[in-house]
Length: 217
Image 1 (cartoon, helix red, strand yellow):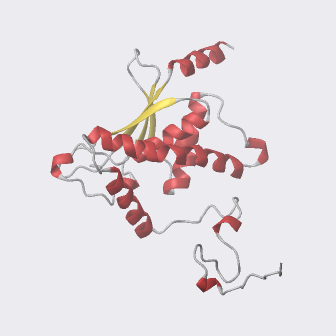
Image 2 (cartoon, rainbow, N blue to C red):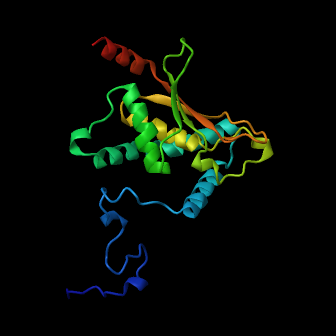
Image 3 (cartoon, rainbow, N blue to C red):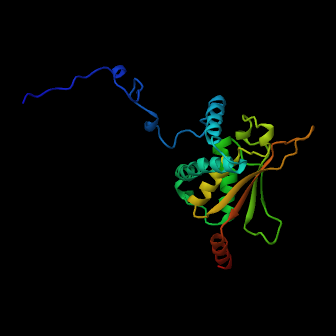
C-alpha cells in the first residue's frame, strides 16, 4: 500500500475551535493570574439573562425556577472553592475547619472574587431553637441588577443562583447545608436597599453534631 500523507489545510478550512495566532487559549492561562481581572458587566448581564431564560422554560412555579438557578450555581461553588484555596499562600492553604471560619471565608473571599467587595453582613439566627441557621446579607445583589421581574412573579429572587454557589462552597468544604435566597427589602419610595437579600444557610444535623464535639474539645 502506498503511504498517503494527509493534506494540511489552513486553520480557516478546519471545523471546530479557532485558535489565536500565538497558539495559546484560555487553558494556557495560569490559575494564579492577577486577582484584579474583571469580567465585562455587559457580558455578564447578557449571559446571566440567557441562563435565567433557559431555566424558566416549562416551570410550574417560582420555587421551581429558583431551584433550577440554585442547581446551576452549585458546581460553580465547588470549583470556586478549589480555585480560591489554590491561590492562597501555602501557609493558609487549608479548608475551613469550623462553621464561623467557613462563613467568614464566604463573606469575604468568595464575595470579593465574585463581586469585587465583601458581603454586607453575617448574622446568626436569634431563634434559640434554630442554632443551625446563619444569614449572609447582601444589600444589592449584582445578579438582580440586570433582571426585570414580571409583576406576576414578584416573589422571584434570581439571587438563588448565588445561593447555589454558597451551597457548593459549603458542600465542598464538608459542611453540607441548604442555602436559599430571600428578598427582605421593602419596595417603597425612599427605601435605601429595596433589593436587600438574605441568604439563609441551614446546616445539616451532622454538621452541628460535629461542631458540638469540636467545641467540647
